[in-house]
Length: 502
Image 1: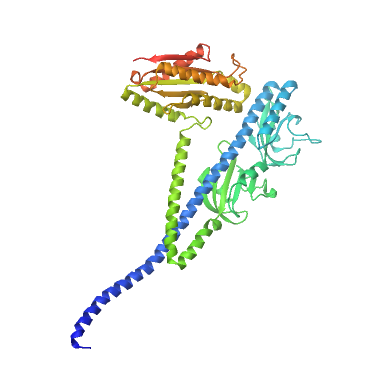
Image 2: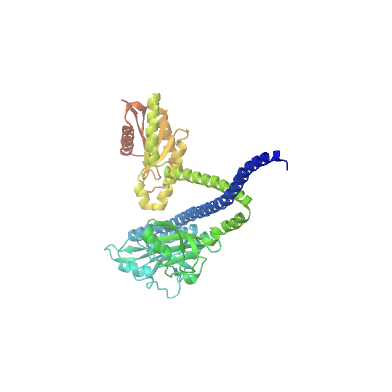
């Protein structure tokens, strides 16, 4: 090598050393960084999977609680109606025949109802939808003894038993019947078909090792999926769900190991409002993380899979955001609507009233408000029962909503049997026409009301309209309410209207 080439080679080596060093350092950094990124991504994916399943099991528990609450509300309403009928009319003669027909109608149209019964204080079968078995005796049943000893008038949810008339496993829901002097007069009983709950629970996918539970407050197991009849009536009070409920309250989600089979599951539970019942859904930890483990193995072997997994994670994140937004929209809609009628609730009504009055004042436009309620509704409930009363309110609400046809109009349930309609940019004549349309629409329903002089359900309506600036916000509701009572005092099934004047 010529001497003249040495400085150049030294210079090239000096250049190469930093480049090689930086490359090695960069490669080493990537070698260190990739496992870190891989581990971080895997951990994030694992937590996301658990969080997603937590939301899924929580939503499932909410759905299960809603279904169970609906079923027990049906039983509760039937029992309230039955006790009222028996205590007022007895079970002899025509009264008993009417109650028998009512029982048969309920049993035919309620999938969860297995049977309906009225027992006398001596355990005599007075009214029932089931064939009376030979030498029938229900005096030894827990619910019968409970009502004999306890004057509590509320519904009692008993432990599951096998029906002596059909052999089917049922959940007894009962109420005490009192004599006029307050002494024990018998028991009204609705039995819910345990198989109905099983068929409903089978619609939910909780995996091969998942479970769904329905139990009483004291830990008595009513139903467990996978179903085993031997477990019905056993106690799970010492299990992880009930232990967690003692410290965490009526709603919770946690990874727990089942005492019954030793499987670790992600549980979500809810206690039913107003009923001594708990529902829970759970998925096995191994099944929840099975997909994640498969991804972890591949990511450990192929770095490229980390990029694919990252893209997949991004897609999942967008998917979760959309789900969250959808849930927020659904929750927002639920928060602003009345659960029974589907109309706007009072909160949305008050917000809309303030907003529309402010808008009308700025624009100097007219404004109208209608307040209405169902005539003699308490008597309707007393005669036909709360289930029929709720159905009546739903039908009336549909008629009211049909009267508020414009996009800016708002029909709302103001409270109980009282409704309100906001009519922006509407004159008094226009508002009266809308009120008359609503009154006529309810009349056309021809809903029987034996305690009304009109023989059917009717509405009284108070209508006030004028310039929004004439009165402060609260005066509009007060004026419409006064007019509503004027309509009632004038004979009901009519409209009272007034122009708002400053």
